Length: 637
Ligand code: COA
Ligand code: AMP
Image (tube, rainbow, N blue to C red; front, side, top):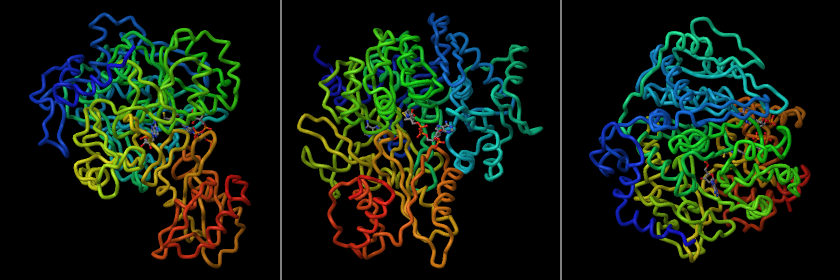
């Protein structure tokens, strides 16, 4: 079948407003828009101005009203607890309406922020949708972040309430959330009025009288009296959520997502990009703490009337590398979306794919990969093993949905390994050089999106228009700078090769090396430091820290390095996967004192590099190479 992609992309180009207004007809609006796009509002314009809607209504009540009430909306599959549970659209609506009533009772209303710091349990999705139902703005914080990261988000979002659980479960250990919550609240200047705590049977948490409330008891009380909150119409331009993501400093960026544009973009993507029909089972094996979890565990599949899967487990070790195939077979998954690192982990454990044969995957149609570069080896391995198309697509927390992809629903384009294929309608991509000129096909440049951004993308950063302008719009006037570098080939296929800032991608998780450097520098014995991302066969990249000790420090170096590792775990969290620290005598720098992190990374990865003309002392690079070699980082030359 030939693809309709080019025709659809052209239709968008000819009339962007008409294109998205047409897509918006798939949703229920309580008030129609005055203008599909108003260029004079917001930082670069706003979508669906004047319209009113409710995202939770479109995810839930609407489907019940249209006859999907008894269809399964959400399947909770938790190999780490041995549990599974199913919620029909009717049941999920009831759970959401009840929790929303509990929130209202605690004084949470339209525009108030609610932090959700939860493991992968159904209540996490219920919490998000309950906020959406009453027009409150949720901010989900990934469970693998430490108290200080949570505190930073509390101080920025100033939540009225925090919703959490007593614990999360990582293979082999229980992660107690409550001490992290208490520490975060102690650290933050802004205090929530109340916390709702979901007590999990594996480990109950002591509650603080007057501040903490038991989730189950609160919900049971509301159910007993039949309390349900109705959907509150909000402006399409009102925020649905704020999701913090790593920026170039320790201060994360609060990416704002609105209600109207977000619904339109996600609903469109479900059929055009993912090729999914309402009623089918869609599984994003991610975490609700990441954007993939927001868009494709919770909102996208539910907006589209699909069955979504909330999976509390890992691709390997829970209990084995066949878990993904078990879930696909057991629940009739039509499409799986995950990060390439999950497949690298499976491939390492079961290179021959022996476990795949144990399951009936006949209903499985497509594998989607995103979150990091999909290396051709992994893509080809997955194709061979699963015998389905493997689709790489590229996006960011900021955009909320794919910038580039291969639109399965419009007809799949030929796959080119290493490329996430072509821009989606809504995105006019330019690859620019430093002088802001378009580079020739095949030449690397900064990948930029011509403004305005399409529906679904961030309108701004929470409470900080200026930081939004400075971070994304200033360097290339008239464009949104993605901070990804890459190129386009003669056929218009994009290749995303590297970040242009200090962000690294560890197991599909976005982390700032700058934030890690801030932590290293806070150790009393550290004079100077640098953190770089080095290649890792499974996680894509892992951070490696280099420290120079203060003069006169004569403690055991191994001891100091251990403390530094622990410090990053305590301050940022285990998700940083920060395990490598190397003490060196000095760091390579330019004559003006800039640390040559890029060159250090090339040395660690065994890549060719050019000696920077401005280098202060080239001998230091040999010292770095030797230090890496001594640490067994074999690629170092
Ligand atoms: N709460 C607390 N700790 C968490 C956590 C959470 N929600 N998630 C991860 N961690 C911890 C892990 O236990 C690990 O701790 P450790 O250092 O004590 O072992 C650490 O954070 C690093 O986690 P991770 O980088 O995920 O490594 P891992 O070895 O546990 O798992 C993969 C590696 C590849 C299996 C896993 O990252 C994965 O499944 N990734 C693909 C899917 C995905 O999450 N994509 C993200 C966006 S699409
Ligand atoms: P996040 O905001 O956590 O989703 O991370 C976004 C970043 O991950 C992007 O800016 C890219 O650097 C990287 N990324 C995501 N998807 C891809 C992909 N398909 N190919 C290459 N890089 C990707």
